Image (cartoon, rainbow over all chains, first blue to last red; front, side, top):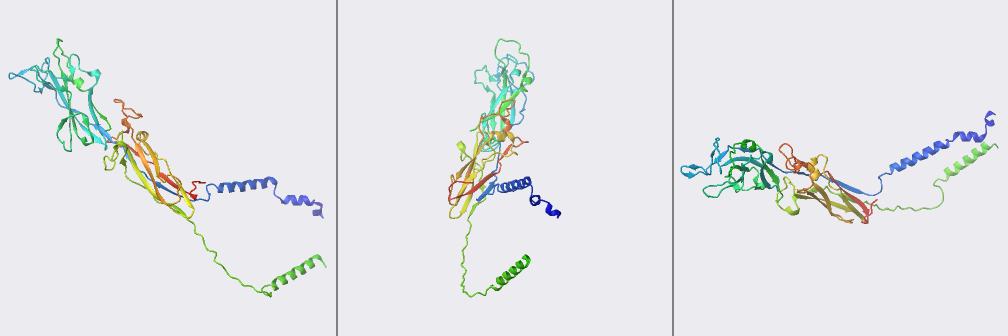
Length: 219
Length: 191
């Protein structure tokens, strides 16, 4: 028979899977076992998540200052036979030594934060300082010898609380001053000196560069 | 006889012996069943974790007593989160871990950079074998005069962390995960 002419071991071998195929199957099985075991250790866990909330930052803000008109204190002037310390509206009168020009600006202070506090500072841009011999702020000199006023004068008027509506001379503020009005009176004084003809009126230019700064402090 | 015939006879005889022997042998039996009993597994359960309100801490602790509304540089605020771990089993133990607190991506970037946040686990502080509270404290510090990420052009201060009328700066904490892992006998050893 033709079938007997075929060697028996050849027939048996032909029914087996090639060794390479067998090896591949073994590797695949091992791989499945390894992957399937990932993260499946025999122990227990219980987990919870919690939303822990948020934090909001506070703020300090000054509104754009609103300024009145320049006032002239003619310290050396005589009105009705007396020195005239009372300010009058400045209408380009010639300035004399010891005269003081003042300008009052107000700004609203808006605060947020339980512990918000700080100070209000005032300064001007050095590049726009009044032309010599005019001086910024300082103390008014009075020919009658009465005490002068040191400028700038800053008051804070609380909008609420026990001091509501009371203009207090201070530059510090606290959380209770939310909504308060900050008032600053600046001055340009004309010194009593020998220098002549301080005719350059730079007041308007200088005034435009005044700056109020609220600086936060932690109490 | 052919081999196939012998095989058939042998198979037939075996079948007769097997069939004929069913239940008809001369001996006695007595049988009972015993209830083998049952076993119940224990459990490890962490309750929902909830957090209290923010309160001022550090130098400002207790002032004001009302809830925190808005924080400013120099402030420190804290809150406590609590849950309950329930363990059932004669030899059950557990270790509890709390994620470190961090700000979510939705937070205002500059504020999240400025605020230092940490979560400190206060209970349990080690492996446990009994039910009990789970607690941790979240602490947020807003340093005064700390590093400035975005200095103000005029004053040099870091106004980027400040809320404005048009942009409220808020930092939100990411979800904090609390995980209790079962141990055996409170060994503290986990897989």
